[in-house]
Length: 264
Ligand code: T3D
Image (cartoon, rainbow, N blue to C red; front, side, top):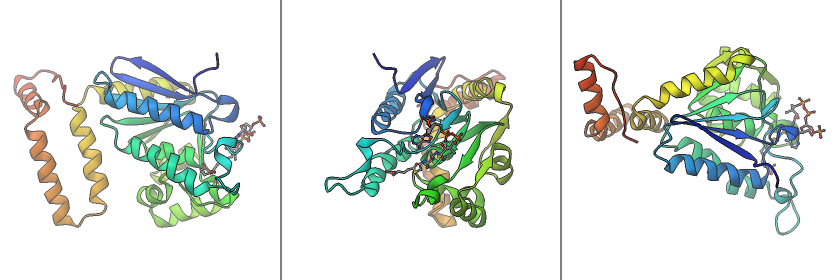
């Protein structure tokens, strides 16, 4: 029997998903897309999951689209159907990550290139091993950034750096990515998974629903004027105010104890 393309492991309320095609730097085939989407859907519906960690097996995180995958190359006419691939596979993947009901942490263990870089950057918190790197490899093969790259990059690092990264396709070290504000933190290679698990366990103990709504409010605010963002805050805060977690958080504060959150 062949190895799963996505490995899933559970530790407490943390589900770790590992992209598992190390010989091809975990580049994404159509089959792998299907397994990854299924694994994310399963984590989203499992109430025992309160944080997801996404990482890669071997020396790479993900080298983007598998450029050898025959299932992806050509459309019905025989001509390349790159737009169809992006619409059918990358858009739903990017939206799935961004709409998870729990925080998603990328533990970038090695090179993250093309859609693999943007898959990581679309996660809520990005931790990288010092030896990892980020490459907007698209321009080298005549494409534009996809998997959310055109939206994410300018918002993360501003137009000047976004455009230079996308036009040149230059490799950015983890430390430089951190210095630009592209990612959250860099840790020594040997510490990556321990640091990621520690951060994930911490997030898993937090009020999950409030974390998911925080992501939503920040994302939606980018298309809103100030007054509309304030309206959105009032609406989401109103919903959260009726939840168990708010009552529990306030009670725990008053009673000087650790809260136990359960909303999802
Ligand atoms: O339909 C569509 O295409 C639309 C969707 C587009 C989304 C995209 O992601 S487009 C961008 C696709 N990705 C790339 O262009 C990156 C290609 N890879 C590289 O440039 C390099 O591999 C890296 C810079 C990422 C790493 O370089 P290095 O020197 O550390 O490793 P390597 O020797 O190049 O790669 C190791 C193996 O992985 C090698 O296989 P081999 O020779 O040992 O059998 C290499 O062919 C394989 N590999 C790496 N990336 C891919 C890949 N195989 C298939 N597809 C890849 N993307």
